[in-house]
Length: 261
Length: 261
Image (spheres, chains in turn brown, green):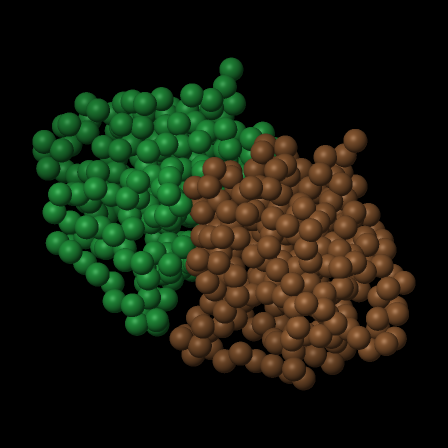
């Protein structure tokens, strides 16, 4: 029988608020067994760019990662945020190691190819090196992953943390019974973005089609659900979307939206 | 018979000059067997502090690490420099993982205690977790170490990279036949700081006493040599001090100053 593995993506305001982050990490430390935490960047990278007078470039509403922005992303994500989380987990008696996708070639990517927009140093994932994840998990280490990858030539690349969590989950689902949790600031998939009470508890391919055809799903949520369904189609047992501050009950399957194809 | 291990500390101008760094990393990648690279910070942290208008605090000529300076050190050392080196090594077909002393509790420290000066968030090392280093080396990974540690309470601490290299070398010398190399911008221990030709090829306790009593050693070199002699007294096979751009011949024992008690 496969061992269980929880992969949790956390982002947004949890990373910007130390007391919330501490509560979240206490809940993470309480999860038994194999665990991977993938974090985004929070507002610190944007603040740092502002302080350093590095303009954030946008093309057609999409953020561009130029060389200076990549440097800041690498410093903030793989440096400050990653090591802050790791040190707090170790202090909670949850041995943890922080890596980026560059470390041990764990997540190889290529610079995004796009016909019209040059996204700069943004990486799309080619390959997850499952060996390195498995080795660390077997050594009773939780793994904290920063959303930076590299290409074959040694170029660091800024990579979407949701996608990293999804690709790690898909790759490791061959080895582990994998649950992927997207922990954010909402209670889950909501029928009304402003009303936490109208939560969709479970989504399947069928339910998703129906909700979408009825126009009941908030547009920003659609790609997240599509990715979740793709992940469960590719071997991930369940994807759960819910409130980062409810992590214990998300893991227990008692809150959030549970997605499986 | 013990396997051999090379631990190389690199700092100074090599880190600030990409073409020199590339040459150095090519030489590092060519070293066979178990390898650990400990890096310092170079000028980037100072530049970043200047750009962010964070004054560098000095007390009695000693640098103080306040909270903002620690944040920059963590970003620059454990983030940008560490991941840049790791990505370049991976691209040179030298699988490498970057860690700080916080990762997997690999180097535990405490905030420096000093009767007169509050150094701020500066760490003095208590303990090196040899298991984690051994596991990674056994998995054919070179380890790239950033000079950040943590205490038991999860506080990150800025820690001298020379000392980190020395403490790792001492701890791992139980398991490996360990050579510790301090790679910097001089040819080794020089009798005249401005003349590369007057190199001391080998130093023992006896030679060191004599050179010191004759006032022939540059003052800044004395603690480095004392630490090297202490390391070889504690089990490290040899300590070599020399030019980072001569790494191949330093490893071969053909240049630099070789120190052993």
